[in-house]
Amino acid sequence: MPQPTSIRNLSELNEAIHQLKQQKKEMESTIAFKWEILQEQYPVLIKNTIFKKYPILKKGNILITLLGIPAIQQNVEKWLLKAGTKAENLVDKWIDYLLNKKESNTSV
Image (cartoon, rainbow, N blue to C red):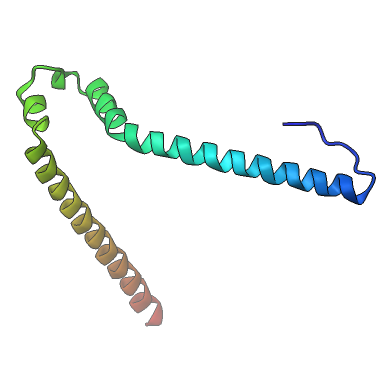
C-alpha cells in the first residue's frame, strides 16, 4: 500500500480519489477471483480434511469407490441437505421451547 502523501490542491485530491477507486476495483476483482477458486476447490478441501482425520478412508476403500459415483454423490447431497434442514428445524423448535418455558416461568 502506498504511503500517504499530503494533498495540496483540488487536482491532487481528485487524483488521489481516482487512485483509491482503482485500488478498490482491483481488490474487488481479486477477492471475486479468489472466492471463485475457493468455491471450486471446496469439495477437494473437505475431502482432504476428512481423509487426514479418518485414515481408514484411504484410496481403494469401498466407501471411496461408492462416493466416486455421480448418482450416489447426488443422493448423498440430497440426503445431507434434508438432514441439515431437519436439524435446523429441530434447533429452532428447541430454542422456541426454551424461550417459551422461560417466559412462562417469569410471568408467574
